[in-house]
Each structure stands twice: as C-alpha cells, then as structure tokens.
Amino acid sequence: MCDFILQNQKLFDQLDNLIDSLEVSDESSLIFVLKEAQSIFGYLPKEVQLHIAKKLGVSPATVYGVVSFYSYFSINPIGDYKISVCLGTVCFVKGSDKVMAEFEKQLGIKDGETTEDLKFTLESLRCVGACGLAPVVTVNGKVYGQVTPDDVSKILDDYRNLELSC
Image (tube, rainbow, N blue to C red; front, side, top):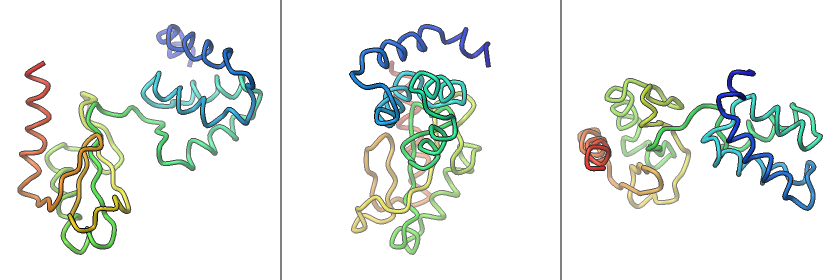
C-alpha cells in the first residue's frame, strides 16, 4: 500500500488539494470526491478509497459501499478505450452475446477486464437506450449500431490504428 502511495504522491497531493478546497468535506462530498479521484487516478484502488475515507472522516466501508454500488466507479484500471456491449433484451435477441464473445476472443479478456497493455477495457451493459440500432456497442461513448461478430475486427483495428497515428 505504501508503495502505491509513494509512487503516486503527486496524484494524492492533487486529490488532497481538491478535498481541502471544498467548503464541506464530509460524507455529503463523497460522490463528488470519488468522481474527481477517479478522474485523477483513472480508477479507485483500495489505497485511494482508504485515503478518501480518512480525509472525509467516513468509514472505509461507506466509501467502498458507494464505489461498489455505482457502475460508474471502477476499482480496476480502465483501458484507454472502454468497449461496452449492450446485453439488454433487444440487443441480446439480435446477437450481442456473440459480439461480446468475439470481443473476448480477440482481446483475450473477459467481461469486466482490461488488456495488459491498458488499451482496452471490455464491459457489458444492460441497455444503451438505442434499441433501434441493436445490437449496440459503444467505445468511449461512440455508438456502433447493428454490430455483428464480423465487425469486431474492424472496430478494434480502428482504435489500434489511432494509436499508431499519434
């Protein structure tokens, strides 16, 4: 735990400055602070959660309860490209389970995991709200409609090629 804190001291300082600037720094600030902490660190590992609990004077269980309740928060590193496959009823009926399986196969990860190079995170969602485009995939919020397993390679290649052009 200490190694993580020492290796990320500048990020912890940034978080402390944010918390110290709040008019009220208690449980009422928790969701805001967690959101900002995730922006700073990219995710919310236990060291960050414990630090926030101490700074806000709330229990670690309270912090973890909020982090684990809201799907927005992640306790694992998130890749540069967050791929979300809708597994809601309409998308599922139209084959999104096969699309998910193809992403898992090509990336070598399962739902909820991130590639070792931290480029891609794969997750399932229950509904994107674009049922007319089913099955739907989003990558960092960009919507892809009527996706088939054959489209997966093209989608991944587009993002891999972005990396090469930078």
